[in-house]
Length: 173
Image (cartoon, rainbow, N blue to C red; front, side):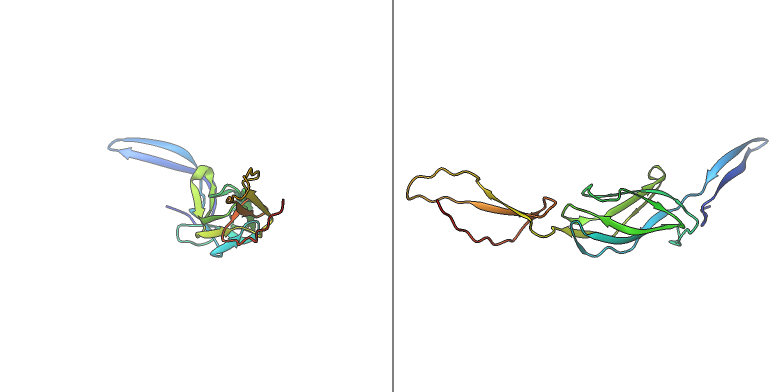
């Protein structure tokens, strides 16, 4: 049966079949059932702090307040920091940062070789503010009285493409 506190120790087990029996001493460690996250806003800006609390819980979703341990953190973009947190007193409160824009990201927690996991709600990471623009092509060779098309793409400081921008164009030779 599952327990609602973290503990370890020895268990004496006897298996009996007819007149035969076998006994063994087992080392047992009670671990959390899963990790729970507070709700992440539906849309966050790349590079901004995501205030979060991660809690070790039992199968009934009750906090396990005597759990302490390291938990691995990941997300779909592989840009989340920190990538490891230490729960103390059953929880961790702090900030995560994700720098890659993506739709439908989640934060995942894992420990005990993947035996204990948890996943946040889904949210979108949107690009930060515009920091650079590239124009394509970068070099043009044109004949007299002809025209050509050029395009521009805006990026935030993390290299995320910013869509739906309007550019004002001028040219001089």
